[in-house]
Length: 137
Image 1 (tube, rainbow, N blue to C red):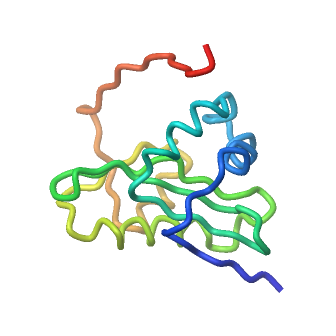
Image 2: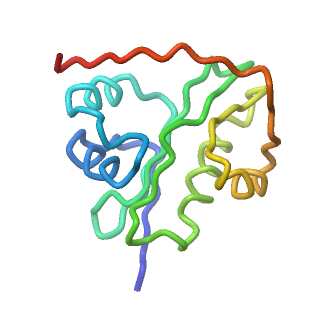
Image 3: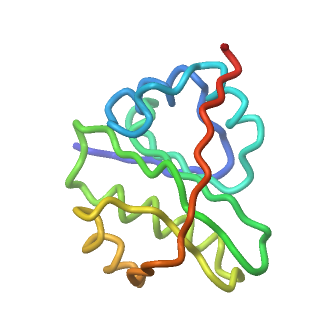
């Protein structure tokens, strides 16, 4: 029986989050040191555990009023398809219910998934300055 426990109070450890990130193409190269630094600054997040094991994680960056950005939404490959991604997004959106606009970046294959939560494609105005930084360097 799949029993999942969702929490917004207990942060994940860097080791368990690193293990989860290893299953992705977009976060597999993150270092433990950088993950530890990110965890130390977490304000809005959600973890899902199964028998104590971290199987889902998501976080948001926000000013709490005008803007929020969802990030690092990840579900363990072994339990994908069980609705955990939707639970992660719903939990973050509930925590951000007073925020005027919520943004996220999504691969084209995930647009239908996020659309079901009310997100709309927003093209042509997003810019990024990507810097390679690592506390382990």
